[in-house]
Image 1 (spheres, rainbow, N blue to C red):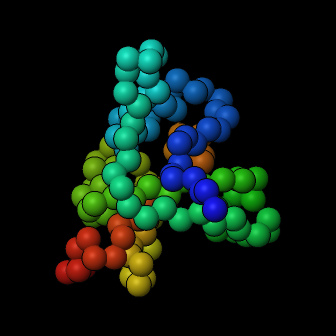
Image 2: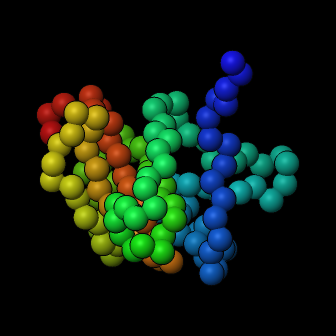
Length: 126
């Protein structure tokens, strides 16, 4: 069976797409979509990607009107949290370590939930 090889894009509506794109670039390092074919789009590092539909009534995303949430892998969750908090962004850290890693949650300026994930084995001392 032929299968897809990864996520080629994440597309969603925004009240102010340009401002939101700048926020993602400034705080999370997700570079803006190139304005020409000569420019390079943001490139992910190879690694695990979870694809998981949730039940319609799930409260995992927070607000029941939210129909999507993006999860970004990070190398060092503590450093990313410190960087975001220095910029005045509220980050909630899940204190529970899981077999697959550690997690934190924040929201972009339009209220969309974002989960940060440091996969297990990235820093076994924490």
